[in-house]
Amino acid sequence: MTGLEAIILGIVEGLSEFLPISSTGHLILASTLMKITQTDFHKVFEVTIQLGAMLAVLYLYRKQLVTRSGLYLKLAVAFLPTGIFGFTLYKFVKSMFQPSVVSYMLIAGGIAFLVVEWYLRDHRPDVPNIEALTYKQAFLIGLVQSLSMVPGVSRSGATILGGLFVGMDRKNAAEFSFLLALPTMFAATSYDIYKNIAVFHKAEWDTIAIGFATSFIFGVISIKWLVKFISHHTFVPFGIYRIIAGVLFLLLVP
Image (tube, rainbow, N blue to C red):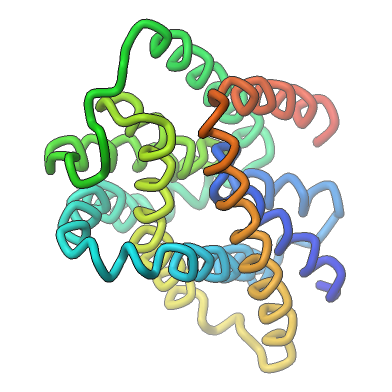
């Protein structure tokens, strides 16, 4: 993998990790379009640069993480379903990392966002902030997040939909999704690195560093933009984008 390819994939990861459009799916599709060989290192690279995006959450929400001491248990409860399913279904999930699966899940997720936004027209949020979220509601969001193990579903998309489903408004649902990324991405990345540590070579750490730094920078940009956008808009544009992208990828990617 070249340095330019690492930068492009870092940009894709950083921008798409927190938008409800599937970062894993877009990384798979971007790699396919650039005809990057799917070696063991490349697969681990895609997972490792997610740590850069995770660092963006820590950077932007560092004050909230210090002051909201009661938040940690809710995040742990929400992470539990994904942690269990991810550990037990690891090999099965990895077998689904195919462009066709990504395309179909992009379309399905897009339809889900359109349906949920249509439903929300007549329903006002009844969970005013993250502190008001119950442990049962946090667990339900975690159950929905576990669906994101299928590439193309989108972790952020699933958790945002879960948050909207239990009664959060768009901004709080998105911010809980950002925070839930911390234990989820750390666990997934650490486990993947542990399982594939043998594929790392000294010469490839520079490539990983480039992707990591790029992912962090564009992760910060993505989070700030999304919070501002959903303060005045719905998730309908993301639903439409997902459907169009999924159809295009089905037509263009073998």
